[in-house]
Amino acid sequence: MALQPLPDYPWDAMVPFAARARAHPDGIADLSIGSPVDPTPEVVRSALAAATDAHAYPTTAGTPALREAIVDWFARRRSVPRLTVDEVLPSIGSKELVALLPFMVGVGPGDVIVHPRAAYPTYAIGAALAGADAVASDDPSEWPENTRLVWLNSPGNPDGRVLDVDELRRAVGRARELGALIIDDECYAELGWARGWDATPIPSILDPRVTDGDTSGILAIYSLSKQSNMAGYRAAFAAGCATTIARLLNVRKHAGLMLPGPLQAAMIAALGDDQHVVDQKALYQARRDVLLPALEAAGFRVDRSEAGLYLWATEDRDAWDSIGRLADLGILAGPGSFYGDFYPQHVRLSLTATDERISSAAERLRESVAGG
Image (cartoon, one colour):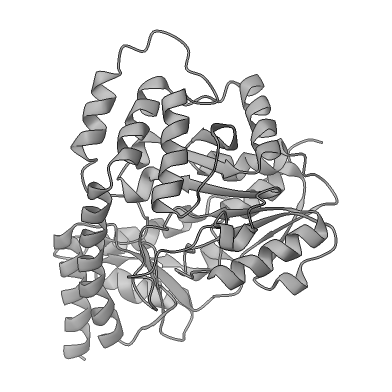
């Protein structure tokens, strides 16, 4: 099957709004893309520097030390004990894994891939690359009989929605009825804010309370981009169903998809150090505490957003009108239409800007109300 035409890259539509925002006297406060701005932790950079004598090919499966680090991290941070090194696999960031995984596991024409209603666009792109049909649904009872792969995203991008243990169990149960692989994209799991998730760990789909000890047909994927400011490292991994991990590993070996050796060493350092994650979460919490009340004071309602790096907000009018209003304040956000067809009145604002830019955006929002 030949690759079918893909949609235009949506962020190209933001160019004129970015120009309007840059024209603000105090410059742009770019809250559109969730790209980290804080430094990569020193423990990670030191590990990378020490591993630069990388004369041999890296292994696609990851070094034994990296695989053990992933296993240990799942047990320590995600309440997922008893994984083995054969149930984990590093990847070159999570986006390529999301995009290519349907093709790698044999999903194709006539099959359905389910993803959330408010969704990271790459889930649908992965369906297109495989020639499958994408269906947006948050209700397992709606999933079609020909569903072969289900994407969950908890906490969600863009809406920050968290699925609790009961919701994850229901999704897993339905996927198993359908004979579908189910995958939870969990890359914001260390960043819980509200509805109790500030104090209670966000559950993994691999949690024994969800799986009853059986991870067959279930995967979790995770990225260090958010928790460790390693977006430029392209450091991620999958874990769970041993059969699916083995298939992914075989395909990736043939395709030469292997994480560079120095980056594997950096991942080991990041996974072994919890303090930098705590420190980074505190930075995002402080930024959220500044931006959220300013948005609400300016007439926005913030929905969900109990975890993750974004505020999912609406003025109950067309999102492009809100994007224009924000751009005139020098603030760049993302329209809800980039994340599916169900939220045309929402905008997404990222917490991944400096303290100064977040404070400036908040002040502009407050002044827009005071000025009438």
